Amino acid sequence: MPIPPVLPDDGFVSFARRSPPVTHVLVYGTLRRGGSNDITLLTPAPQYVGTTLLSGTLHDLGAYPGLVLRTDMAPHVQAEVWAITPELERQLDAIEGIHPQGLDEYAKRVLSVEVDTDHGHRHRLDGICYEINPACVRHAPVIADGDWMAWIRRRAPRHD
Image (spheres, helix red, strand yellow):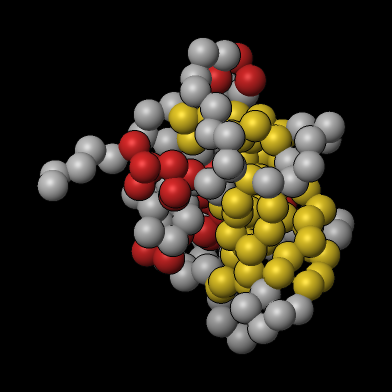
């Protein structure tokens, strides 16, 4: 039996250690495929599960978006669902400023969502979602259609 790698004791606790374990992430912004922090370029590689819609208000913060979760809205924010390892979760926490930085910009939440797979199936699972601190988006434009990737294509300067 292989010996697991020793990780630094820096206080990181994976949501995979929860009961029940949370081993999926819901990505709605730069971590989506083709985004500036494309999750498929990280290691260990995540496994694509499908897509989902999240309930909330998506804001443009310039280089990245922020999602304020809301239960009083119909789901419309586009997100990809990925199965991840604790090692990748640690990297995602670092990208979002959660750990080890402990910044107050994002909070790590667990959401129960309906996932649509590429095979036409739908199932429910729990996934990690990084929610923006509402104070950070007070004056940020709202992305009404909830699709960060389409938004950045629309706002990109054209060179015709």
